[in-house]
Length: 480
Image 1 (tube, rainbow, N blue to C red):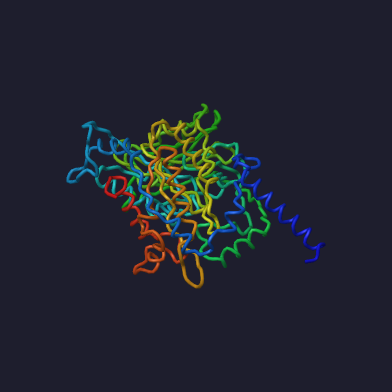
Image 2 (spheres, rainbow, N blue to C red):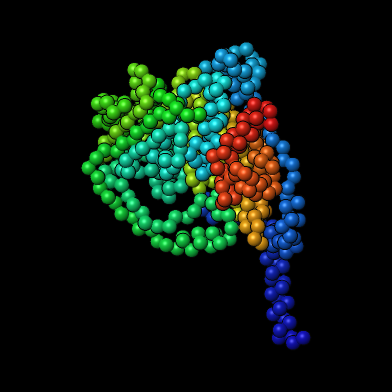
């Protein structure tokens, strides 16, 4: 062999080996400025490329972890049962509670009150309760939700976990903060899609191309105040009227007001408190009403968090979806704000159902995600002491390969990581991937008649969400 060729080749090979060895030694370092991920050069060289082999290694029975739910179950068992009903769990203490509340955080999986509405209905059927719980001021899926009618003006600034601006501003319990403005903004762009909707390589390419389009934002000024209107719906998981209504807000001035009208009657004004922290205003009517409208001055930049529809008794399941959100960086709801909301709403369980928006078919290591989610759970524990947390795993999601749909090969690895997250944070864990049937179960849900999931092989439809709610209810009550 030519010496001029051999010598550079030898040097290059030795250099590659040396870099590989160094990469194995350098520890992983989590930080917000320049995170360092563990590199596995040599292991990747010998990794099997067979999807079936990698899945067989990754798929294992990951048991549910219910033990952390004990405080929740004791609380549930202490609720009085409606006449003619049987309690979902046994009353072990003989004590009596009046109310139980669940905060259910997720991504587009629960948009439109999916999963949470049937769960709310099953609880309220046995233990009572009137209302859908906390509602945001605006929603991108207000027309899709059936358990309440929700309309609002355009001139609200909506800030969420997904907003790149105002990161020092605390979000509310809904994952949003809403600010009335004398204008509304229209942004012309092709937004990065919710990864839950990415089902094959073609769509992935289209999304990658779309992100190259530069956004253009225009402001349109208005001469009316910002408003929001809610109407009751007598449907399973909803309510036929509103009896107890509370407004949550902060950052009001001495001159801040809200104008409230019931069933299109003349509005009445309420002064808002300028005290620090989350404030609550009881705007309950003298007798139940079927609609309520709130109006805020367009030039008063107060922080409005939402409106709660509930009652002193029964069970409430609050629906908190953020499209595209991963569950990480939950500290954007500041500790003092979470603590304030807990003092008013007294949650008995926090549910975190995330994962699909970090899912990547090529990924085999979710340790960075786990570390970030550990910080999320620790933040909740610190802000809301003694409130149990339930981690609901990622569900099955299919990708298109060779003309057919199969489970994305990273999903079992992601589920295993989430189980580790639950164990390391003393959280409960519900393995939804396993409960729905495991590998290729999404394919079956899409193809059965009638289908339980959408043709994107990722989202449950309304019928499928009802089915998932039953699986979750069985787990919560010890029947899984």
